[in-house]
Image (cartoon, rainbow, N blue to C red; front, side):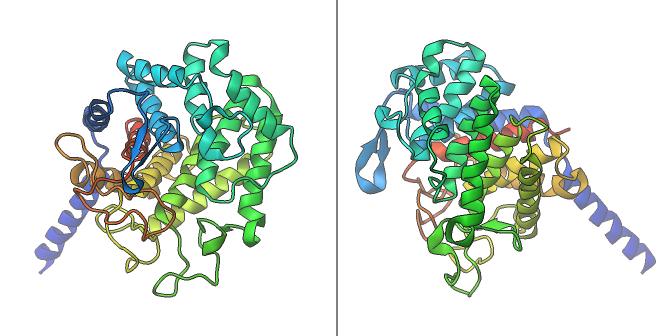
Amino acid sequence: MKKLLISLLTLAIAATTTAQEIPPQRETLAAMRRVNDYFMRKYADPTAVMPYFSRKKTYESNIWTRGVYYEGLMALYSIYPENRYYDYAYDWAEFHKWGMRQDNTTTRNADNYCCSQTYIDLYNLTPEPKMLTKTIACMNMLVNTPQVDDWTWIDAIQMGMPVLVKLGKLKNDPRYYEKAWEMYAWSRNTLAGGLYNPKEGFWWRDKDFVPPYKSPNGKNCYWSRGNGWVVAALVRVLQDLPADDPHRATYVADLQSMCKAAKACQRADGFWNVNLLDESDFGGKETTGTALFVYGMAWGINNGVLDRKEYLPAAIKGWNAMVNEAVHENGFLGYVQGTGKEPKDGQPVAYDSVPDFEDYGTGCFLLAGSEVYKLR
């Protein structure tokens, strides 16, 4: 009996160790390149309009979905600087004349200026004034007007907040940091009583999901990808925000709280459900939310914000789940929920299902991989 217990204990320790093993960098990079190559082959022309299959219409290719893809592509480029990645991003930005969607420099819709995150990244590599003329105009409009109530849905925090912070760093101007905080704080604390619930560590997607709204089994409805967007925003803000910024501690605390809550509801297979606390509400594997949580956890570990021992197993488990169960041999990414704002949208979510847009899922996966790659 004693020998049996020892054997079982040995197996348990071995299983735990295996689950926590960081994948070799070459394997992580290979998975990222495979997924990205699939996208670049299928959408070889970076200037082409984006087909929206479910609505039978098209959108300009600098809409937010493509902006998120390029965030991921630039993250891949940062660890594997292949010329064609840079060229693909540059040609896209040049085609759009380095402008917001619909070329509107007075837009307050974060979906329209999400693309500016990549414009700034490209500028930092090879600065040309034309790259940021329109981005600066749009962000100055935000800074110089009193409104702070633009981000009425939490996705917008990721689409818009990093633009302000990236530009603030580039120009060494704290006004951009402060405006980012004011807009974030309004969404967090004021809108509908505050979209962030610090007691559970998650955000309601918008005012429509604040209680008394409940999921089918009577729990609060926290959408996976929506919360993932906030995690990604916090990462992308913290990596550019000065260490002495007065709001940095709040951002760090929010990221820590969200990752703690996400870790507690991770599925046994490593994915997260589309409704984080209600598996009966269109439950099942979902890649985009999973990728964004992995991105946040891996970045937190790499930058000393999250405890390595506590979060490394969850991050690796999530990454391995996507690589082993979502990535097809040809690089197609499965289990990606289509666009929407809640669990029932963009269904079905399956291994072979094609979402209405393919770009943002690839971007989320590349962001996650870029931080898993850096784990040691």
